[in-house]
Image (cartoon, rainbow, N blue to C red; front, side, top):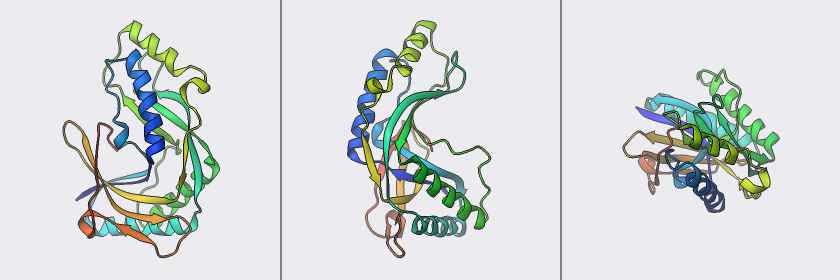
Length: 215
């Protein structure tokens, strides 16, 4: 069984900017378990544990969705959080740029996955990059400082750093300590009919990434 998700992998410039943002937030909230930027990715669909047959169906759905799309640009946007202000569960960075094209490709992927028998996610897609998951409530003073940092004007938290998205990746997630291990199983270029790059178990070079973030 393979714990599987579909994602956009981030380039070096975006990871560097996320490292800067996380470093700034870590200084005001050192007690939070912040994500390792090297393992961050933009998740488009989480599929859970799949056998080989279902994994192949996921690849086919991803390949079709990629062929229907076109490359587009995304940029790091404002900061935010999930959960109540007094007990946030997740701190995230939003995305700007050509978000309509991002939503379109995620919608195409959701439809193709549903056509291949995968259940559609009930929650609407909210594109974001997870910077931290808060397992415990913070002390009041640290929480106040963190919330002020999150609410700072966007010009202070993000500098418009972005990237061109050119492919979708089928990813494997292995839960491990101290960090999950992410492996790219296959990549599909947007707007191209036949290009596929395979990794790991399918021949070629296996590429692993460690991150505290769980897909």
